[in-house]
Image (tube, rainbow, N blue to C red; front, side, top):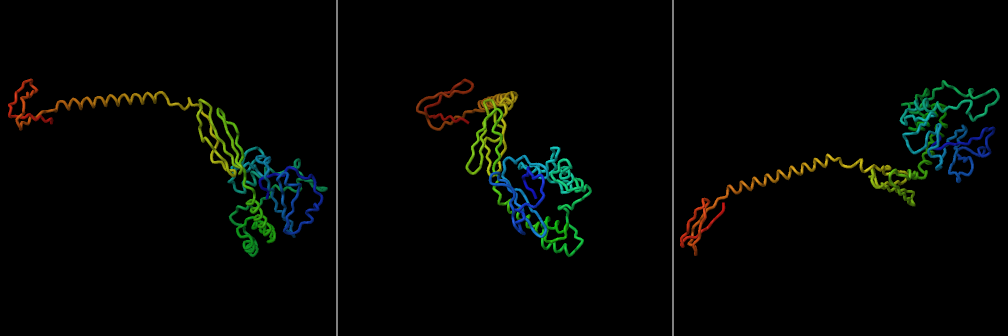
Length: 333
């Protein structure tokens, strides 16, 4: 199993087993290549005997490899929707079943006689090892049917739901190989879990019609602040930050303020509505005042004699004098 990286330099010819592999025994780990500390790239090989079963992967933190892998490794750029990069530059749907992946992704990357890295013995060539009619057994099949019922039961007892283990026992008929595959998968998962948490990938430090300010924290996080030039307004968040490879937002854009100004007809409607409201209010107040004047009456209550003579004016313009033993009490109703 290869994961995430690609070995770009391969020895042109291997004629014997390297001494370091000769010292390996069942269950051991052999680290091949140069000093991995300088490139942060390692290739551990796990060997099980008596059958040589190489459970291998590449673990790396190489920044230069990010976005630059291809072939059967796919494209490693952190986007799970773009995994299966085809030779023509297109991408196969990540959710495709293994049959489609085999024929539409794997087969197009098959080597030819011109680009093969292998050398061949006398009388053999690239075509000697190519079987175009071969149809593999795919792991996403509902169930593997064992011709030997006893072997099938033994495989399920050993493998459980590990598909790689079941596949290898079904294909080879050897339980030991299935167990080796299961251990390899478990070891691979452990390595992935122990891998350093991915860091944040910087975004473009440029904003059209605006400016960007970037601040990095000691824990590997990043903070971006965005600001637009005069005459432009921000469309999106003012600040975004990243922690452990996860961004809480996306980069905004600066739009022209003129493009987003309120249309003139909106102001016209608002002003017209205000004028109508004022006119209606004035009319209501005038009508109420007029009705109030028409309904006003006066009642004269004479109870006690006044100390002086008063004159009561009436609506018809006439008047009457009160006597000394009368008191004028005028009540408005």
